[in-house]
Length: 178
Image 1 (cartoon, rainbow, N blue to C red):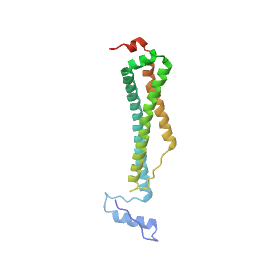
Image 2: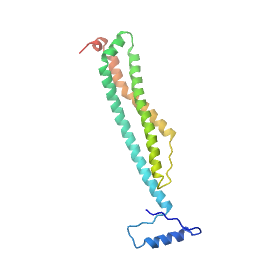
Image 3: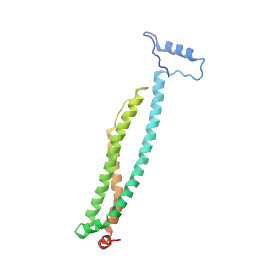
Image 4: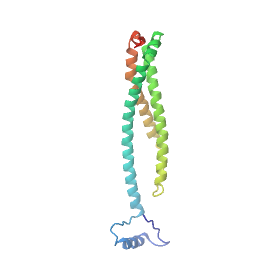
């Protein structure tokens, strides 16, 4: 890549004609103006952005199943603990809310770490692109808030089934040792 700047007073069409004439004998060399190069970079960055958003959506789905699996294993391992709490007076609704809150807290920890790492990686990527283009770093607060809300919903949804299963288990069955 070779970047050229015309001398003071040289009109861009004249500079463009001189550059086109200089590279005319080299078919593998392309002369691009700043506007065309910026348009190509914008297209590439938009494609990358779309790909990253698709990967983000896929990671939300994977996070849902991972969190649901973790909660199911947690409930299975602590069955005796929940039976004892129920025997001491905890209601089924209180147990359901406790397990759902635990699931939401776990998901919010993951969302928080993901947002921080995403912002840092986005900043680093924009800084590296700024070398060859006029890329600027920007964070959409609405976008971040939407994914944080989605993380809360995923946490709640992932905790519903294990919480229901634990709350409906008979107390005597939960206290039984295996």
